[in-house]
Length: 392
Image (cartoon, rainbow, N blue to C red; front, side):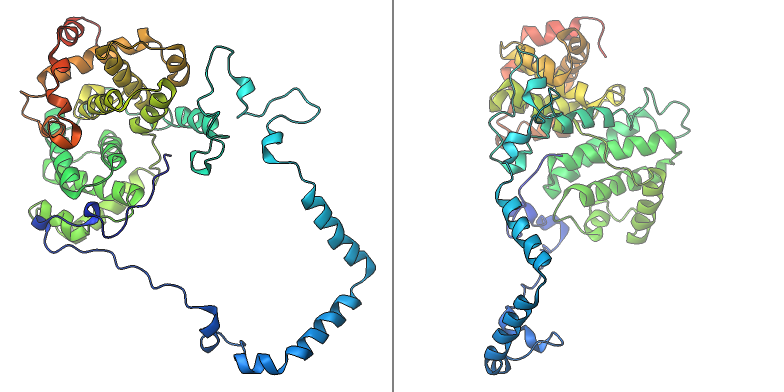
């Protein structure tokens, strides 16, 4: 998962908006007490004065113990110091000595015409450069373990795809109001869809299920989360705190406490890095990805495919190419991506006129550089792609 720096408690992002009552900031934990005054709280720790009186005795005891050590024990300590001093640096262990077999994270495994995007990140421990390739191979395998079926609401008595769209649109507004992380929104929708496809939910309980999905996602992704009271209040007291807590248990048991479905955002960051794309291209791809969470007909697509298609479309609108590096790290060719991108183009053209405009309005703000109203999104290229058949 992507590593993020923690946000300070006093930042604007971590306060509750005025509409939800008085902000409740998490109280910082008391710092550790200095060791010099810990003797009052720890049994068996003597005072400073008693230590001064026994300084000489203590030194004699240490000397005596050292002298009494067996020769073999002393030799072992000496050998351990020697061994630790002669260990080779980790950088030299990428290929096993005396063997032609590379480790899984070695750049020697890459094809000759593919750039190693992690080559210069070895000095940053947060990027996990040695294991980045293994991590994303694992995420690619993991997304297959948590599938969402095509047309997963078929046969449900009350919940329809239109009701899902209304709920997700409202959850986007709640997410924006609470100023939560991007990951939280994607995980909320993933938890919601996985629960809906396996369980019958009544219309009266649908909002509770959606709010509980966001509550669970907050616990998984956020450092400072809205209170249960905040969720109840923003839902206009449609349910109680007790109802939310009970539903949380029900949903977690139904999902077998497995919440690690990879998110499109994880793959987009990886592929954007591989393509050396600029911020505007990356941001536009994020907008396309976020629009896709409203679409019931795209809910079954793999997160990596949605991310790659969003970036491919953003590059197309910027007159840039899908390179060999992008195809290698995304694991998708242009032929595989174009049907999904055509479906995205139809979403883009209707985003400003549909009843569910939360994402469109969000990306129309200055904070997101007015991406949703960018002239490129109404260009002839978008209309041409949208008119083509074979969409996802």
